[in-house]
Image (cartoon, rainbow, N blue to C red; front, side, top):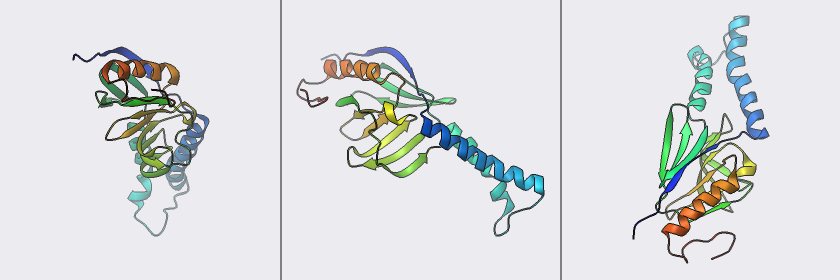
Length: 183
């Protein structure tokens, strides 16, 4: 059976209020502490000064992993980053659903928890372990694969879901996928 492919569609990754506040607060600390130290000529005691002055590079590193948008096309999902992209095959996608606040009560096990994005490994009671590539908690779309769960936050979550549901319906047996409890 020949697999269907998707036309190319791009979705922005909008920032929610929480991400905006956390990024602003983080940037003020990571840039402000070294700037204040340079201005007052007071080097912090108890540690190497290069570590303290390296704080702005943490901001740059977090920016490098920012989620800028999502592109779906062919049989791939591309997580757009500044200057690069993370690519996931959609071939084994079992289900996709728009679940606002799906990341609620999550515990971050590894990753970035709010400096330009929420990216990394998380877990909660609703989803179990999952990978997040998120910027807005109210726009969460959950993609389930046999081996993993991915959460993304496109600007048009319903449209994003509908495009991927069409792909799932065309490429999977009818009783394999589920969405909102429907078969």
